[in-house]
Image (cartoon, rainbow, N blue to C red):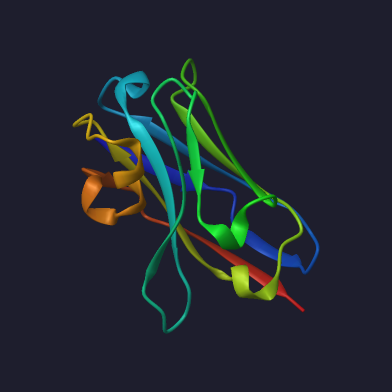
Length: 127
């Protein structure tokens, strides 16, 4: 299984970026997908998650209304659309996949609920 994240970069505060994560090696439509981030000097933090069908999403409070997770199961890809970016959003962003059908959906706020992780993509927001 491979998860390949891309789309990071340098953006000014207030700007937008869209991250993508392409999965291969297993049936993508069976996986709950999550996004996490690790800021310099901080612990890894949950950003958001999306159910296998895309019906359900969950976000950490600090990104609600600014970040949107979506997926295209035909392309084996999950996206993280980020708008109104702030300097505090600066971090390495990781996608993760849970193929073990863990329930309830809310457990996907925890990194231990995922089986596989991507390599990360750096987002830097300048003030």
